[in-house]
Image 1 (tube, rainbow, N blue to C red):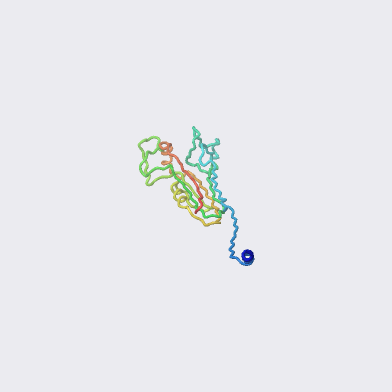
Image 2 (spheres, rainbow, N blue to C red):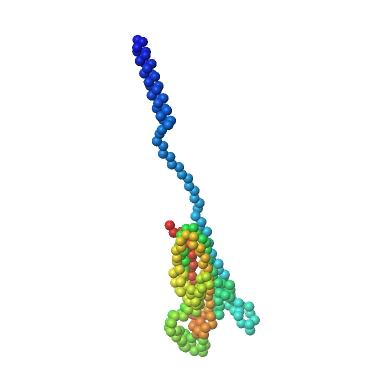
Length: 230
């Protein structure tokens, strides 16, 4: 009986020693792997600015250039519609159209300019009634090539791109100006579009237009888009 008690006590002591050994060994040696990290970011700068600044473009009235004429206006439409006529220009009405693209985005971008020459005033090559001879309504004159009386000039950053051309010429120039730019490129483009219908000796064609082609018109659409490249 005594022997059994001694054995139980010895066994309990052995277990206690083993537990203490495990606890002590756990304190001094173990496998450990640790990883940690932190990060921060801000939104990349965009900052692109597009402005289309236009004067009146075309007008329903134009001031006179003739010092011998007492009136203030040389052209005025009866219905307040915008019109053009020989001798008028965008300069007469502060009508130069200016559009700018600026900014320094921190992303790659593509610049697209879409110009649609919807209609322009013109006469095809051929024979036409000559309204400059009031006494003979059978007189004609011949145009050997297309006639565009209103001429447009487009500049980019002060450099001529189209000089006294058609709206179609402007369309070709602007639609071919799409470009892509890497991040942090400074965008700084200034375009200016002007027009004039000069007195250039085409009296017969101009007079014909005034009599027969009053429904012809000038019209265009312009849009500018700057898009982030992924």
